[in-house]
Image 1 (cartoon, rainbow, N blue to C red):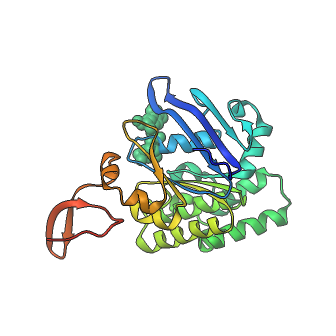
Image 2: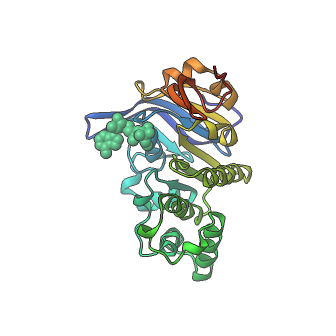
Length: 275
Ligand SMILES: Nc1ncnc2c1ncn2[C@@H]1O[C@H](COP(=O)(O)OP(=O)(O)OP(=O)(O)O)[C@@H](O)[C@H]1O
Ligand SMILES: [Mg+2]
């Protein structure tokens, strides 16, 4: 998967990960992600998407194999605060579960947490926080407690915490799950804009309809294999019905048309006939 014209950010060789040494989550993953790439990791529940992002973010050491980020071996990053800070200055992670990301008394404090960790001046911290809150359209929520927010508002606040550091790389774990259509569209546009700004963005999802707007490259994970089973551009992947069925990304779907319901193979990404 390595291409000659791309300076790699992440390089995984034979990476496997098992929880508690017993529950396999990733098996023999070989993957290179390059600077400026917009990669979508597409896969069904339990195929290892969140585990992969946590490995990219240095939160879990691989059980086997090797991961490099920016040319550095990450296997001991958990024991090396200096390396961890170097990595987290460059890589921002938005967890699938916003409740994990938001732990401060107010949204402002949560968004300021990263910049304060970086040791930046007060004025710089304030400027970064305001900019991140503005980008995610949550300025009005700054003084609220995270537990007082709706799920979608939490998600936007969680993304603001990652943007506040202005990282080169963003790892977004199912960022549009459970969002209403307008919020989802705003977020998809933002992800696309981050890509245009030259940032590298790795987004996991199982929502096919967001893929064309945010993917330069799509990597499909198999839910049995727990590793990439296909990759390509968005059109190629989304047109491959057999692949999408095999990866449990489309299915027989009870589908409503007006007041009538019927069942047919359904993809949100492509056109289909209704009989
Ligand atoms: N804390 C944990 N302890 C034990 N097993 C885990 C844990 N977290 C995940 N797993 C297992 O690892 C596998 C991969 O999980 P992971 O969360 O990476 O999948 P995912 O692709 O993100 O799924 P989803 O779409 O549901 O978020 C699953 O089989 C899951 O049961
Ligand atoms: Mg997940």
